[in-house]
Length: 155
Image (cartoon, rainbow, N blue to C red; front, side):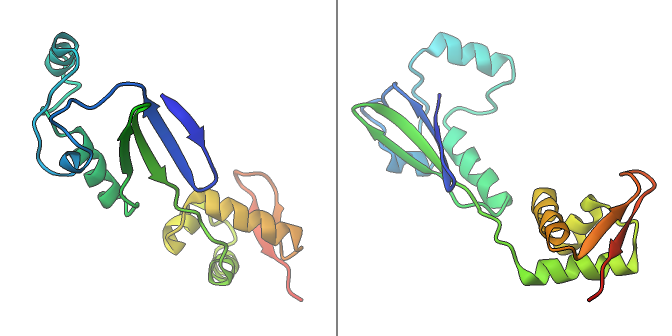
């Protein structure tokens, strides 16, 4: 169950407890699967929703590594089990702004997706940078999303 979203993290909690033979530390290495309800777990396994027993936490950490994200923090106490994911906050950078402006000068029809790929930031970060540039009257959009182009305002 999602229990909280914050600017810097997102938390998921479950009132269930870890089996006595498992600890949070043991979830970070190869460990046995001890499902609370083996019938439900077997049904999910047969449906292809579980690829291997006892790999859920390892798979989560592996996917975070692949995405260059911080590893989640697992915790367990008398209130239940929790997983906390740290958010990677995109910081506005003068370099990103300058790269966006330079690309718009070179290719007035450049798309947000192309900017994001070239600069290696998310499309959401590019949209925020563009909004800042518009607010500062450094760029303007001429025409619509399709068929329009960017104008860089000098001076």
